[in-house]
Amino acid sequence: MNTDAMPNATPLTRFLIEEQRRLNAGPGSAVTGGLTALIHDVRLACKRIAALIGKGALANALGEAGTINAQGEPQQKLDVLANEIFLRTNEWGGQLAGMLTEEQQDPYPIPQQYPRGPYLLLFDPLDGSSNIDVNVSVGSIFSVLRCPEGVSEPTAEDFLQSGSAQVCAGYAIYGPATMLVLSTGHGVHGFTLDREIGEFSLTHPNLRIPETTSEFAINASNSRHWEPAIRRYVHECLQGQSGPRGRDFNMRWIASLVAETHRILMRGGVFLYPRDRRDPQQAGRLRLLYEANPIGFLIEQAGGRASTGFGPLLEVKPESLHQRVSFIFGARTEVERIERYHRDHNEFELDVPLFGTRGLFTTHTV
Ligand code: MN
Ligand code: MN
Image (tube, rainbow, N blue to C red; front, side, top):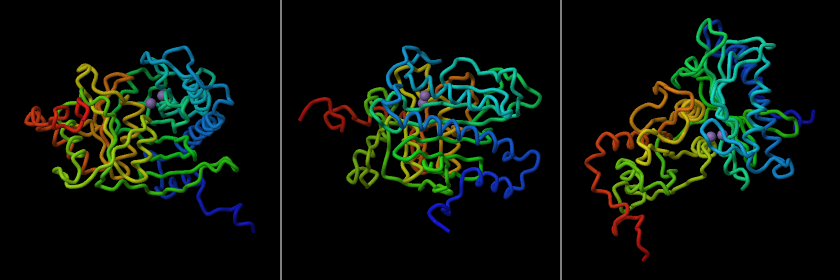
């Protein structure tokens, strides 16, 4: 037998069905045949998007679409196409009662001709799309909730569930290799797309995030707006070996949530998109229901911590569909440190000379 044609890696479908058996899923268990069928369709949507993105400029799909999304942001052509792919690939299967996408203000109702199911699918069809023209890794993020009992025409209210209620969450990353990383609440597992056979195979079982790290990711161009706790944290990291942390840190910023998450799941680190002082009404930048919650679910399942900076992210009670949130996640001890700094931040308001002549982001040239 040709062993190359029969690798040991477990295909995604087999993994899910075996997980179902292992958990002896009965009624009431999260991992059911219906959920497996739903993930199957999500996986197909991701493969379709991977194929489209992999063609780059040849697909004639780069550039702006000339339209805006639910948040008033300009859409790329690929945002619109990826959204269509997600809706069309998942609407027919009979597992869903409704969908919520970053690209549309209101929930998407399942068309009348298709049966309804017990789940809700929430997604960011293309994350990091503002970077697509420069060939940086982008991704898709998804979250699966249970539709409340007896509801077949879900309203916005039915989608407003906290992250701890998710039955499955994951993302696809379209990088040098396309991967699907997901959790059904029993650890986080990574699957790599074998383009020749068109299937995802288990390559990264049981991902775990190291509790400590010397790598942090933040958009430092916002530093003048940061709250004191964040200024203190970053300042101490930048001081390196001679500062209170006693070791040197590396800084990373890809500006693609999926790519940042993937790096942290692979080798550790901490990510910060904190709320800041630009708009006190706005809690942060990332969207709670289809960005922060699914990523937070994965991070916690991998032993890391997902936080608003003030408390557990997955316990935030959503108030609106496209609500934004302050999001800090990754290595548990670093996230807990940032939460601690937030608790006593006022003491440090004047102590962190981030922009003074002694600070590391000096405003004068030397
Ligand atoms: Mn996004
Ligand atoms: Mn997006």
